[in-house]
Length: 324
Image (cartoon, rainbow, N blue to C red; front, top):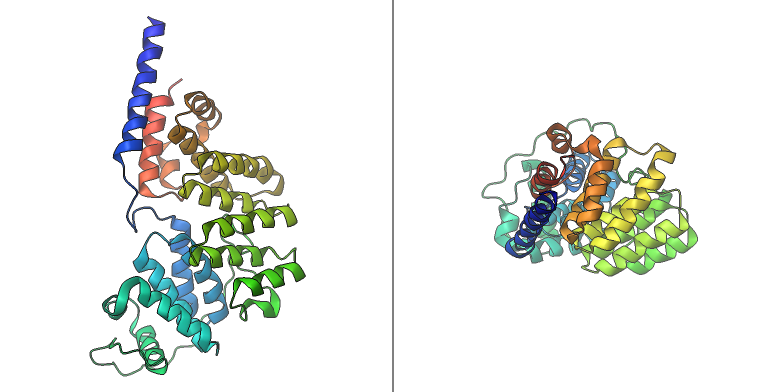
């Protein structure tokens, strides 16, 4: 009887796994978004409206990194980057990112972009400056007096605690991968540069180079354990599951030694479970479920920075295979 029960359980596991593997297509943009990147997009928008243009550029570069599956949100990040660079007197970058946004959503998408009127007025101005034939406003409202800018805040971001740091005067003048690489050679222990170069490569569609950059970060800055988590998340998005598991395990091994954020560790544990499940490794899955009982409750899963599909998949895993 026990043998039959084990056999049935294995068949159920295989059936659900096969159904998910064959029946769930790649998600369209907007359905597979890490809340971490949405938070950065929101922070970048706020930084721009508060006139913290340097801060805006840094947050938006990383936001665009994770929004590559959603062209509307990625275009919004590019628009705010264009506006920020324009305010920073870097017209070349301003024009480049505006054209990137246009390539993603076209003139109609740009005209219908949901941004505050003050930002839309600024956008209308740079559109005229760059001589792009786009009408963004039916009738431009009278520009209101500018409010006193809010104080700049550099709150650490879970998983990438050093992203908000500004690497001195190098943070605004970088316009190519070659320049980033030169800065990294000169400042090999400036972790923020690696994160920004990785984001630069993702924005350019060169995911392999982005991964290699994060690998170099780990080699040259072994104390930056967040590099393992960010690399693993990129691996997981690409469904390079064995690599994701390897980097998640390293992150979890090192994170307690540096008092890393508890929620980031919970996210890593969840991604490790999901990776083992998607690979169909039932032995490893059972071992992980026994080891990580603290993330089995619905309330804990709700608080994880995972997309809705992965949250539902995680709940199903716990309900089906988590019973001891």
